[in-house]
Image (cartoon, rainbow, N blue to C red):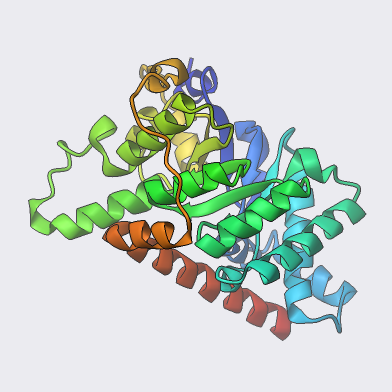
Length: 316
């Protein structure tokens, strides 16, 4: 049994890519996309026709609607290959506007429904884990539109997402690791901060334990991995979204992979249930320098790639 098959025993495997032609070989249940992955895909010869077709078919529409139509085109292609759900992201430039996020999500959902997709079962709307994004997700969930809260770096964000009853969160393991490694500089000890001691892994384990202890139904999906060791240390998490490169490494290895994270044992921890209003949320996030910096950086990066994608479409 290879490591990918071993991982499937305990965890739902999700592919993190816009390159849907890679999906069949790894047989993930779900798939996630983001503006950066879509931008990367449409710059390849295999996928550029999807962008050109969207521009030709919907010429004259506002650029933001053209972008949504392209994202949904990728999403429907992905759904034709996988049995589960695809995550499609709302424009990161709306991360601090609850009403605008809801309007954009509603349009993405309407476009999927026009393609005959069962949105409730097969689509997750991806939203940044800002206070405004979490509030938008709360309202979307109440309407039966399920959400994936992304760019999640702190326990406070996870607490707020659980209280909002979002369907799924995506804690960013690798980006947390990146911050602590950069912060430590020459003092960083890679071996001492590997596996269960990896700061990104520890963050997900804490969130996973908190949710299981308090019966919070929100699914935990570790994301943004830098190496197979981080994935192995979270074997047993509800879901893990993994790049094609790391999926290939897992599929190519027959080294032992143990059940590292058990929902029953995780739920036995003693962590008090927390409630955060807006002021408490913002203060807790402000107190976490890593989460504050990585959230802002992530929003800026996704927003920049959205602009690049718009320029590509405008030039087509």
